[in-house]
Picture 1 (cartoon, rainbow, N blue to C red):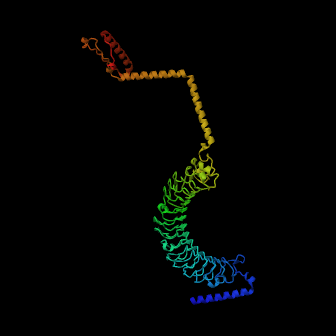
Picture 2: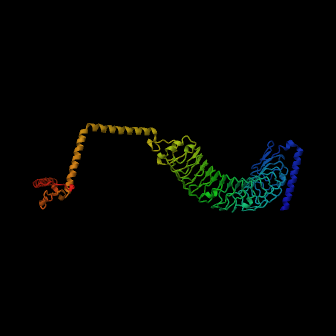
Picture 3: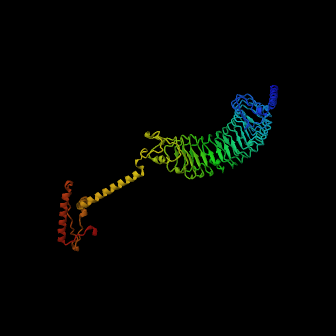
Length: 559
């Protein structure tokens, strides 16, 4: 097999040499005009594009001065060193979406000026430390969507100027500690969508210039302390979809330059408040598609520099508590979309956000919005669409505030007569609050005040005309009430209560004690008439007895 490959390389090399000799023999003008079928060749820009040209091999008779060649979506199976050795001025090569399964050592030996090499969406399963030998100027290497399983020590050692390396969507399960050695200029690294079970911390540690690390869609489950040790310049960290359900308190320690953190699509049940608080410069945080039920008060404490927060697709989220963003005064954008159970934002949940300009609350479970929730007029962008809104009088302010704004369409879900209608611009009558119009309110107040004044005037007029009758009626009423009260009181007392104690004027008459004859009980059905007669008789008898004896009656109260 190896012998056959060598023979094919030799034959191809000889053919290349013969073609080039022929081209030079024909002259430079004719050489500049040669272009394979299905390709476009621009000798002014020195770009050749053979996208979907159904090629099996790399063309061998192109202008030797070309600087960019695009060979995407063909059927090329191998990178031929002989094919590239005559294109020494190449700066950009794109072999994406072919059938490449191997790259022989030394294939790019002649490409001293190559800056970008794109090999994504092929079938490359193995690389060696000599695969990229000769690529001293390479800054971008794209190997996404291949079949790589292991990254060996020194694999990229020849790429001393590499700035961006994409190894995403492979089958990588092992990264040896020295895999990224000598990549001191690397700024962007993609290791997402592989089969890693732990963060390859030893391999990452030498990358002290790394600014972006995309390592999500693996199967970590946990982040240990100092997982990203040595990455002091890291500004963007993407750990989306990594299956995380546990983050150690010191997992992000040392990431003092981090500005963007993506932790969405994991299995977190609480906002990792303590773990995030060690990030002094964090400006953008993504936490959607986790298992939160509540964004608690102080959930983002310590993140005073936070400018954008995205919590979308949290299917268990129901409530945002008061003070949830109390420590995030610099927040400019809040995105809370697609949370199917989110129906409650407590009063004060958005308090203390003077810089908030973009508020996205689309596709949640809100049936109403509070006018005091936020300074609505300060917002530049507002999205409240796809909520089951009840369009009643309490939402009149919302209908009015949406008119001049660049906001999405907010459709009513209830009541039935408003279902499917946009609330934007709905009148007070349509929202069931006929007297909410200030002019109608003023008219109502005027009518009520006039009615009260008319009633008061009529009452005064009637009183003035009938004042004598009223006074007489009041006097009669008071007199009758007093008489009835006095009679009832006298009837309820025992007769001994009305007796008088009689004192004798002379000491030798002290044994002559006068007693008032006791009256007999009066039948209750004639009690008023008999009571008056008995009282008169008693008074006459007492007066006669006292006059005859020369005794003055003394009331009990004076004893």
